[in-house]
Image 1: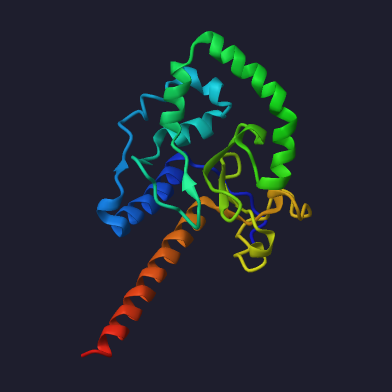
Image 2 (image 1 turned 120 degrees about the vertical axis):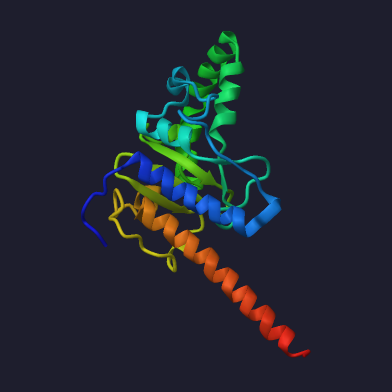
Length: 221
């Protein structure tokens, strides 16, 4: 496991995520549609909305320049589906000023609940520092993928702690490896390493499925 802190490179992060999404498109075929951002990023994510999202420059730039699945997105891993930030920003832009003020008051009221939920259910975007952004998440029996645009890593939050025992340990030291019950101690990978691993897992599954199919059909020949 590397002790060296990786460096975040926006282009490389976009390329790693896009490459994985492209593979999913080839595997799922007509079941999914992947939309790519125009030059300059998604227009729904206007720079003036960055403050509303609470994201840093790098985190906002990342989610502004990656592709998104159009309708029902495939699971990146079990029960874990990607967020759609352009839609989120479109909703933000459509709110009135009075609605925004009400939302701010609501955020203050639930701040304590959010803090408690982090320890129980995984990281919430509201509780993460600005340079971290949730790429995908699911429920109790799934995962949350957090991109750290300061360290250039993916934090693989595993909801079921018993699952963590057999999971890859990551190739980078976690932020706080001594915090056994914190998402900050979860397996941490360089961005490219993580998505290359995801692609390999999908390809291995496809090869196993095809191998099993042809072995089964051979019995009836």
